[in-house]
Amino acid sequence: MKAAIKRIAGMTLAGMADSNHWITMDADQAVGGRDGGARPMELLLLGLGGCTSMDVLSILEKKRVHVDDYECFLEAERADEHPRVFTQIRIKFIFYGEAIPPEAVERAIALSEEKYCSASAMLRKSAEVKVEYEIRKSRAAAE
Image (tube, rainbow, N blue to C red):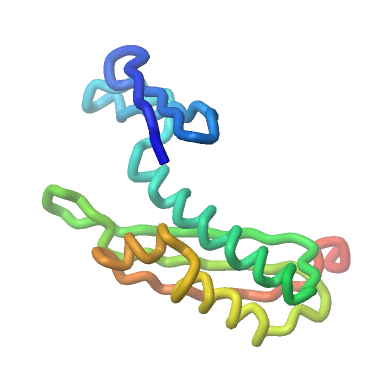
């Protein structure tokens, strides 16, 4: 995997990796940025959420578990001192659908955590990662 970062102006950067999609990054105005893009640490957290979500959804699909909709929410705490690494990360998976077996969800999450998610494996070296999930009725059924 390769990536390139280019300065746009000041602290505003654009990055592109092998997929050829540009991502804009920026710093807060208080530290010289223009607040025009995501912070790099936010991208790390989003990367974790995307990595584990793709694993879990793919595993459930292979098990022929139908999920009507899905959300994943992440919260992270950082060290007070530099380098301000993540010290704790909470992931909440929310699955929407009828007849989603909890044991299938639990197994998919475990496989992502223990075997497949590279982002999780790296971040667990500095942060405690806590996971929870909910299974909710389909949004259409709730209306």
